[in-house]
Image (cartoon, each protein chain N blue to C red):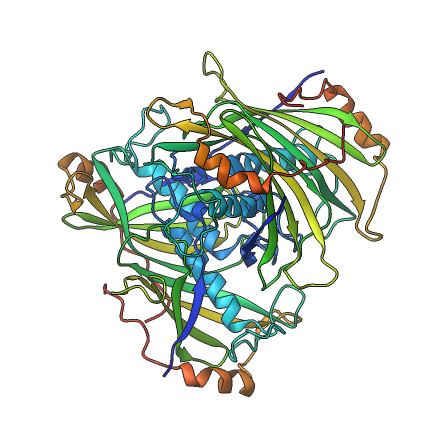
Length: 155
Length: 155
Length: 155
Length: 155
């Protein structure tokens, strides 16, 4: 039920000529949050969900099957990290739906919700290049963060 | 009915550590295609659809309300420009849905379809910061490119 | 004499197809460090050197006149922020030379020095678009960080 | 003696919040030009200088040892490709100095010179990870493009 909070720092270069964080760069920020949350790491501050041994040279490759994002408000430059909140919208056999909210820096009152998004991610066996099933360890690590998927505005 | 073909050149830097064009960068390529197709330009090779006087200093600002993308196949580095195909999925009062297919370079047989995507774009009056209606000139320029929206795989 | 230490987080997307932080992206990391060190900010953790009221809508625009960088070792992906060290190599009438070392995350022993670089930055009066002199407040804020410029390897 | 002309397309996303092509992105454009000029390719429009069999999976890896750039004028958004001119400033045993001028699109009169730059590139044997000597084929391909190195403004 609980969301994972990932502080993600905006770079000045994420702004475009309109002076706001570019709409494509918001997906870049989600990518950074996702990697920190799911990819296994020996870092002491890695979250308990960081259990996928993924990467170009690892046994598992993560493949993005689809993405969807609703933009709710323009994102100005912030020196403080944005509060990116992640949770699991659903787990399938070899895939999972990751849901996100991008919010103003933690502590800012009232908080702004800048965007809601979802990514469908498939775990691929690097050797066979075929989808592989989620492991029990992965399911156990992620189950506490299962919640309703994002309710997108359109259709 | 007819799609607009925009050649968009991949940069080597669009590849990520997996050696393919990064999933976020595909939305970057769509942004480039979209700007060339819709933003007014005095360039002689600008398409007839390039009629929005948009930009930070112009009377109209374009705002991205939402995006959705299905990734169908990894995109390798190509020296030849990809064949990005655009069409209009629907026109609303102040918004339009732009649909895309990202395909392998024109002339490659058989062609690969790498991704399908859609962007909902809202036209904003820069002075009032409120949505403004599509003009008759815009509707006339875009009507020949109306076609069925992308049929996304999920939900 | 003292260097300013700026923790700068690498993004996974800064890696290129070689699996290292891309050489151009290292200049991106320097840009982020430079903005945090020099641009005025109301943030409580902004350093005492952050005194230039700069930006597109501000009275001062910063203009990069030249850059130079020596790459010493490939930079792998790190979850912990890199230790970017900045100092002032010289102050002119309207310009300053900013020097940098990009090092492995603070606390890593022995530390790696990945790159050394310098940027010549000119302060421009936004209204006149002409260089403007460094103020006394700027000189006072930066003088404690004056040190020998980078000794580049070549020529 | 002759320079190699590479048309390089600016992306709208290369602009930063100042509304000009970002200073770091100019090095990105140089990277794209360099790859098209030096990396071997089966593409019919690859130049005769494209003879390095380089890349992550190839026998040769190219390593950037240093870069230097003078910025002469801000670069606005152009729909037409910039005219990036490359030549060889010097060839060493295992390295070469590549020189560049970034100019306004071909045909624009009078042409603007936006930046001058140089990259020192080392050829690395991927297997041993040690520098390897330029081959005779490489020297022969590049000799016609040897010319005086860039005369940088400072020091």
